[in-house]
Length: 346
Image (cartoon, rainbow, N blue to C red; front, side):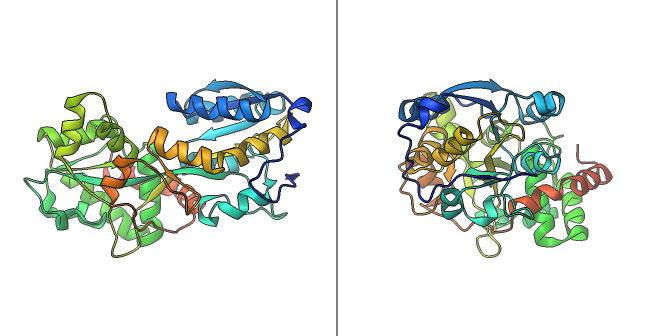
C-alpha cells in the first residue's frame, strides 16, 4: 500500500497558497456533535478549503466505503471507536501516511501501529474515559474502584450497563482482555451478567439516570455523557448527574480505560494533501481544546491546558490512563463477542 508524505515538520501549518490548489475536502464522519461545526468552519477560514460532509454511524461509513471502492469520493474518515478504526484499517479502507507533525504530538498507543513502510493508517484525535458511576447512598467508593470489582457477587442485582456488543463496551472488554487474559476476562464477563439489575438497554446517559433514579446502584459510562449532563441547561439532568458518585477505575493498577475518536485519510482519497492538512489541524492546540471544551472529550496532545469545569470536577484535574495500544484492543473484538455469546451477555 502506498504511503503519502506530509512533509510537515511542526504544527505551524504553512497553509499560504495551498488552499488555491485544493479547495474542497470530502469528509465521512461518525461524529454527530453540533459543537464540531466550529472545527470545520475554523479550518475553512484558515485554509480556504471547504468541507463537504457525509454523516453516518461507524458501521454505516465502513459499509459505504466498501461499496464505493475506488470510486469513493471520501478524503477523510472520522470514527469514534477503537474497534471500528482497527476494522477499517484491517479491511484496507485507510491510506497509511507519514506526518512528522502528527507523530510528534500523538502518543504511540493512541494511533495505528506503523505498517512495513512506516506509514500510519489512523491517528487518535480525542479520548473518552470509561468510568463507573455509583449510588453514594448504597455503595462506598472502594466497592467499585476497579473494573474487576464490578463482577464481585456483593454487587448482585445492582449493575446497569448498555449492550455488551456496543463498540464502547467491546473496546472496554477488549482492553480487559489485554490486562487479564482470556480466561479471567470471560469469568469477569460472566460475573457482570450475574450482577445485572436488568437486561442491558439504552445508552450511557440512560445508565447514569438509572443510578440517579435508584433502579441500579452502579453503572458504566463514557465521561463525556456525564460531563454533558453536568453542563446541561436542563436542571433535572444536572441534578441527576450531580447526585451520583464517579470513579476512574484502576488508579492503583493499570489505569482507566480510554477509548479513542480517530481520523484517517481515505484509501482512495483524490485530495490527500488537503486530507493530511486536516488531520494535522485536528491535532493543533485550538482544535484539541475544542474537543475538550466543545464536546467534553480529553485531548490526545499532552500538556494542553483545558478549561472544562465538568471534566476537571469529575477527575480532579487528571487521572491515570491505561497505556496499552488502542490497536490491540480492536483486535480482540471477535474473541470478546464470542465470550459475550457464551456467557449470555446481550
